[in-house]
Amino acid sequence: MKFTFFGHAAGYLETGSDKFIFDPFLTGNPKASVPAAQVSPTYILLTHGHGDHVGDSVAISKRTGAPVITTFELANWLEAQGAKTVAMNHGGWCKFSFGRVRFTIAFHSSSALEDGGRPLYLGEAAGVVLETEGKTIYHAGDTALFSDMRLIGEEAPIDLALLPIGEHFTMGPKDAARAVEFLGAKRVVPIHYGTFPPLVGDPQEFARLAKGKGAEVHVLQPGESLEF
Ligand code: NI
Ligand code: MN
Image (cartoon, rainbow, N blue to C red; front, side, top):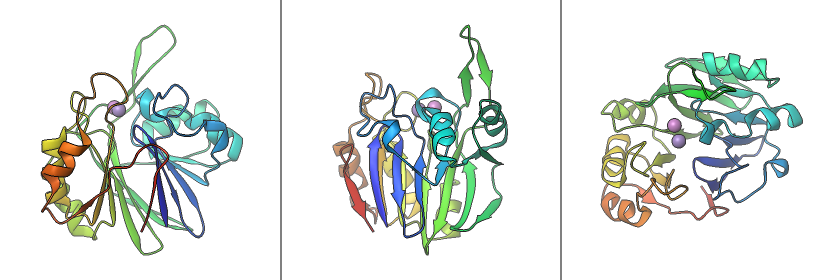
């Protein structure tokens, strides 16, 4: 299968049967490597309600018919805007034709700004685990470091982990390197850095700190892919 980094926390996973887009913030994303109108996923996986993750979810779902698989309150909110959704919550698996999905905890918040700028709280932020074609992919969403990442790695060996390293709103390189250790992932791609000025975490520093922790670190430029 092939993973392509689309910039920020957005990524695209192409398998034999499906195309998954994670956190499809493309319109307005200064690092986006592809316009939203050019992606046609079969599923949209969404970690939380912040604008730099929800992004083009509704537009892509409406155009392609791909459901947005996400947490309960966020799914309801997107459904009201015309998206197709699958509403889940932390800890439980949901089976699909391609395999299964579950949401993990993430230490972060989840809200959107309504018209007029008022925040609308949308439940708890999450990470997501995707099992398909015998492989396990973990997108951590936005999160602080938490030691229960060990549990995620113990459940099944993680073939690819997507970890935020940007600082300010999430883990920085140092904590993300500890996350690599907790997860025991085979491959790691750093995400959520450099998009906006506060996201100062340096992927090369992350790669250096994560060295020797058992994972291959792949620093992908937006648009670059990794086959595994
Ligand atoms: Ni966020
Ligand atoms: Mn974010």
